[in-house]
Structure formats: C-alpha cells, structure tokens
Length: 136
Image 1 (cartoon, helix red, strand yellow):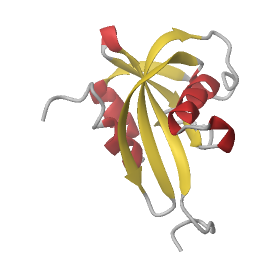
Image 2 (cartoon, rainbow, N blue to C red):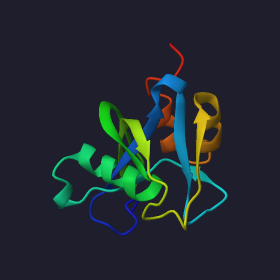
Image 3 (tube, helix red, strand yellow):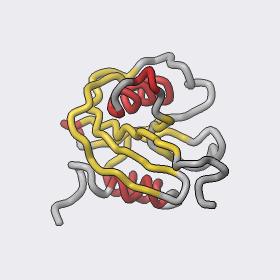
Image 4 (tube, rainbow, N blue to C red):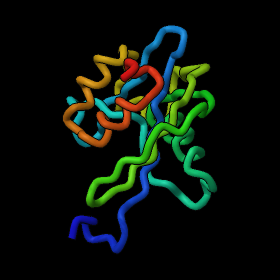
C-alpha cells in the first residue's frame, strides 16, 4: 500500500513564496532533515475551508511569510500524498514566527530553488511549473 497506512492519500498544500520584483523564492529547512530545503507545506485541515488557505497558513507558520495567493500552480501526486502548489506573493516577513527556532529560511533564485529541492521530486516538479520558471 503506497498510502503509508492511510485509506486515501494525504492532501498537502504547498506555498511557493515569491518576491516578485527580485525574482526570488523563499525556501525553508526541513524539520525532519535540517540539511534539506523544502517549501512551506502541510496537511489541509477542514478549518482551512479552501486549499489555498492551508498554503497561506503554512507559509506563515513555517516561514513567517505573509502575502497573497496569486496563482494555482499545479497538483503533483506521489503514492501517499497529493500536493497542491500555490504561488504566494510575499509582502512581509515576520522576524519572529511559530517555527523560527526549528527552521532557517533563505531567498534564492529559481535555479537554486530547483537545485535545493531536487531531493524531493514532487517539490522540484511543482516549482518547475511556477511563474518564475524559464519559458519552455
């Protein structure tokens, strides 16, 4: 069973935090693997009402990033998880945030973001479809 013991795949909402004028993406370190970089992401909860609300919540909790969802990017599926990606145009970064003691955050350009996310195929594939990706 590819769902890690669940009857259905887990629904995860991912924010792609963007500083549009600088063409940068905000990455954070993983709590489970502190040497690996990830996007702010987490499970959809019924209280979120909409998937993009979960992405906004995760960006604030995990990265201290405040902003507006501007675009649905893509959905990627692994055997155990369905990932929904949303671009979040960042307007402010909190200096203190819920997980600041557990994570680092860093603005990087698109190519560096793809490089750092290669270890997690779903994240790398999701970011390749964002609006900062080179035209195909």
